[in-house]
Image (tube, rainbow, N blue to C red; front, side):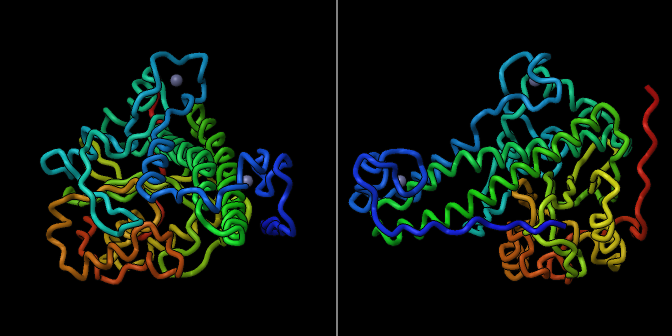
Length: 373
Ligand SMILES: [Zn+2]
Ligand SMILES: [Zn+2]
């Protein structure tokens, strides 16, 4: 696979004139950009965080493949983890828990707000996901394509917001010396470069899932039935580096990573962990095989670890959280949002008490045939 080469860091040997272009690459004049930055008031953390949240909550254009010609109504807050079945099943008093990956502490969040993003018009959100959200889960190709598409659309929205937020982040060098401004801007450059690549990757992925909505011919999946009291719901897409045994399967500095989508979904007929991807993908296949070869008693925990390490959009039952021992809570806080950097965060060890699976999963499940139209 092609390795990505990061562009070299900028070298600033002398500062530009007042009316010349700023050294930072913003395209603005120096006097309107970095000239007085060392003297300006540093931006406070809460202000940045608030502005970032606003950026992530901004509506995008409708992400339906036939947008905008068929759209109607405004862009609404769409749930990515269905509220009435999935979130309600783990809520107490209308709330669920999310572990904040920055503070590593639990936050209560109302099920109305949990897992929403503003990426679909009212019409498309209401019609597109009906086959998934109002019917029993059969694991048909149509339902799998909807799960994969929704997870991917949400991820694309997140990556677009992250890139827009770059301009906010670039202002956080206020009040710093010129030397540290340059260092910080160099660091932001490499972050922006990574964000661009991530966005491109997700745009390609989204187009592939768009096509699956019309003809779900390439979707492959592992569907794992979970016990009714499974305390977590999630949805998202990721490109893990390590498998469940700690073996590296791909490296994040490669272009076009093997992505998979993951959902813990509940419907009238039960709770299911669904790994869905576009095949053939030997890398994902090996990761899935590594899950299937885990001892049965650790598979329930492995699925929870996958949600905690790789998906921000993960919600936890408050009852389960309050039943944990302090050391189990510490372990959950240690791994949350880490993306498994050392290759051991995904490996189940018995330290997180997830319920056992109802039946052992030893082989890859075939996808159910399409429903007759
Ligand atoms: Zn500048
Ligand atoms: Zn629409």
